[in-house]
Length: 130
Image (cartoon, rainbow, N blue to C red; front, side, top):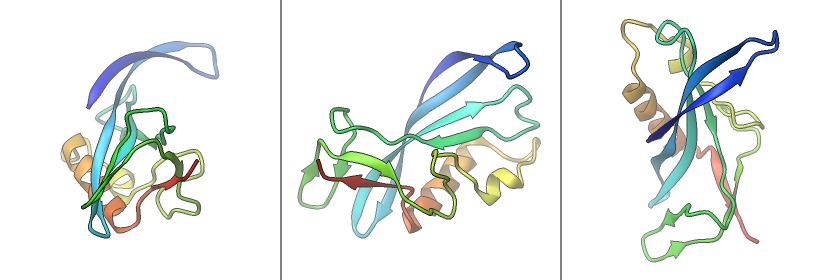
């Protein structure tokens, strides 16, 4: 993952600096390895509150790659899988791990591992042809 600081403007007008981690998580689905792009926002009261996570589909002109056993698919557009159990239409991720977040126990590494496992069962993003 890479990270950057982002200035957030809240609805009440105050500003804060948040940390955003962005990158891809590997999933294994139907014999293929796929990289799902995500943004993990570290909120102001982290680790007492869970991070906010989004699946962030890419466009075909990005470097997003899907590795399959016999070929490499480049240039495909991604979109969020409709009616996904754990991801809304805007890409926000809802997982039991986030709902049960415990400041003294939960970690970003475990969250990432949990996302890999859940999204390997039902991918949160899918590819569409141009």
